[in-house]
View (cartoon, rainbow, N blue to C red):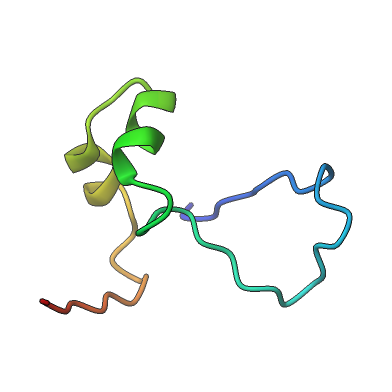
Length: 58
């Protein structure tokens, strides 16, 4: 399965349909990888192929 569940009970203003950032500019994937006790590469490669990818370069 390729589903993710996030506990937002500590965010009372959270509503159905709100946008959620799992990792990005303000939430580096390195921090998520540390929490998962792995490396950033494994975080990215474990995301299902069905998830749309958008690539850009600055």
